[in-house]
Length: 269
Figure 1: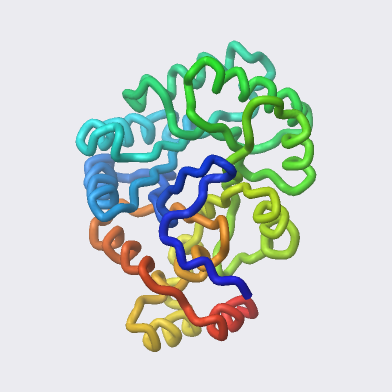
Figure 2: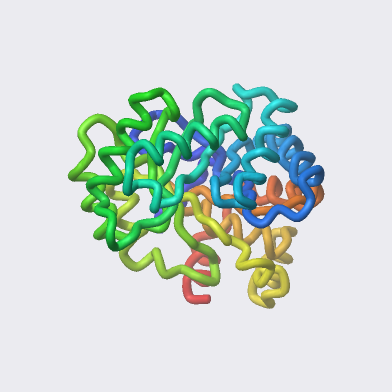
């Protein structure tokens, strides 16, 4: 199998590279701790942060905004997501984006995603509105979340000026469902994965196979689980933590790779 050794991954077709590991911000319990974790992550080079308007009804974006002011806007890559129901009216989308940017305290996001597809709003409509969002200077890049191959196919044929640079999907060493069809499709089309729930809400921590493999590399089960993901081309991941020590642990998943033999063993896990 092909092993990607880069710790900064290609962002779609853009030529830009982003950290293979960043931070997610779903279900923040302590805003101060989250800010501290983001600041430490940026210090360590894990400078990609994902959030969304629906996280804490906007409070997650406010927390990320506090961190941005501490680390400096140019030192952090910000992704946020817009709820799909907004796309019934493009003006609702613009207002939602403006509100997100205000909470984040920035004029322009690096990346804005459609949070998930819905049956009664066409992907074509979503893409045309997203291009207008980019045209207005609200974001540098556009993307999607929770899209399957058929959604991506419809999205790609309905874009005229911009590319889908990211599809954010659930992916972990314990949930490899995207590897059958979606991941190969995204690699072929140079769409970067942002893998959410990569640690399966802590389930990887006590996994005996991951613990045993970690001993071989002098790494933790968490570091093995993250390394498995970023060993794949075009795959980045956004584990969530509010703990500085955990951020440091995430950093330890970079700078090395599992062997091909061990990657194949984990594919069968």
